[in-house]
Amino acid sequence: MGNLLAVCVHSAGIQDRRCARLLMIRLYAMFAALSVIWTDGGYSGVLVEWAKNMFNWNLTIVKRTDAVRGKFLSYCLADASFTRNLLGV
Image (cartoon, rainbow, N blue to C red; front, side):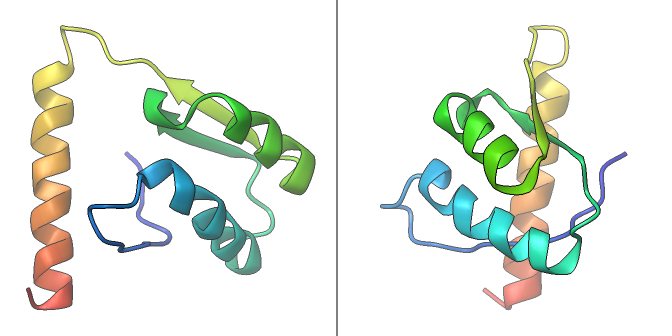
């Protein structure tokens, strides 16, 4: 089970990957002791090295499989509903 530690809300015209650095800076300010961050494949690439160099974090990419795709989708929908309720949208 993962716990929501920080949220970054932005327009749909901005890719999540661009806001990830800002979100990680916020996370580090609140939870500097973090060492492992799990994320999906959308955040792979340069961001993994940046997180390691900047905060000494191990950014672990969790690959989705067909077996868990439905569960991930329902989580994303529930997460989006929670965010809308939290923001009063």
